[in-house]
Amino acid sequence: MRQLEALTEKALRRRTPTRQELLSVLSGSDDELMDLIAAVFRVRLHFFGRRVKLNYLVNLKSGLCPEDCHYCSQRLGSEADIVRYTWLTPEQTRAAASDGIDAGATRVCLVASGRGPTDRDVDRIAPAIEAIKGQHPGVEVCACLGLLSQGQADRLRDAGTDAYNHNLNTSESRYADICSTHTFADRVATVEEAEHAGLSPCSGLIAGMKETDDDLVDALFALHRLAPDSVPVNFLMPFEGTPLEGTWHLTPQRCLRILAATRLVFPDVEVRLAGGREIHLRSLQPLALHIANSVFVGDYLTSEGRPGRADLEMIEDAGLQVQGADEPTLPRERHDLLRARRRGAGTGLPPNA
Figure 1: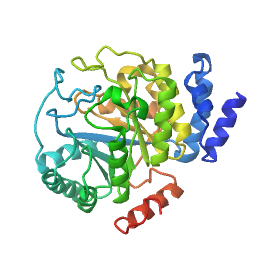
Figure 2: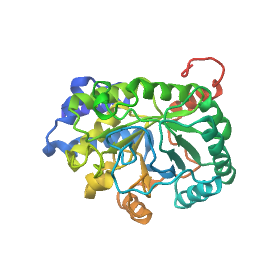
Figure 3: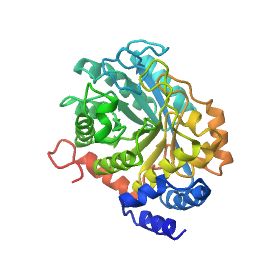
């Protein structure tokens, strides 16, 4: 208990835990799990209150990807049974985004498979972003299009994009085990490119890919160095027809400890409960929302999520409340930093100047 109290006080002061402290959280006993959740909830409550931010994903292009990410059903050579289609039109994208917004989402995530967008792809997406922002000016638009080339982040920002997502997924030392067509450094460079353009950086991980506790800690520290404003935590969905099919190494309790470790590293950052929560956390999902302050609702890229009404009921039953579009997600100090970062975009200043 004393160690948990010390970790909580450290997080409340925005001090980063040590490697050994995080390893002890990840390897802790299930008998102490409720004490851990209660301790981490104090941190969540301090910085975010009882608000839960709803996010909605729109899959702009499905399948047809040349990358070989082992966890992905859309990878090169995947035999997974998924729907494959090319780009949605701007009107289809706007309509799909509106469905999520009408259900309460205050962030829309526009995702496309592929190594990264061409300049023509960015031109194709820009009208959809402008249409969403025109109809729903208070809603955040996050793009997730893969590796960015020079200047593309600026063009996305100018179209109205608020954030860019590109997950690190795992530790640098393990990255070659899950992908050979691009590198960990490529992913870091894209997050930095997006931030330098003034986009809010969003980057997280996928747990359950046969990683060790040390790998998870390495990934969390690598993310911390990037200073993202939001950190999605995904749990592997081991699709049939992919190299990681049949990989079921997670328990609900393990997922909660991973979320707790993430919150302790990112006390004042949006921690998002993302893909795989339904199949791995199962009935313990409400406890996860006492750690995370953000969640995806609706379907994911190539798999179904829970009905939106069920998630809203879960949030209410947990004594939490859906965040409104006019409520800031981040604590004031971090929100002010984000605004300063965006004002400095294109000036040549360092991203956090």
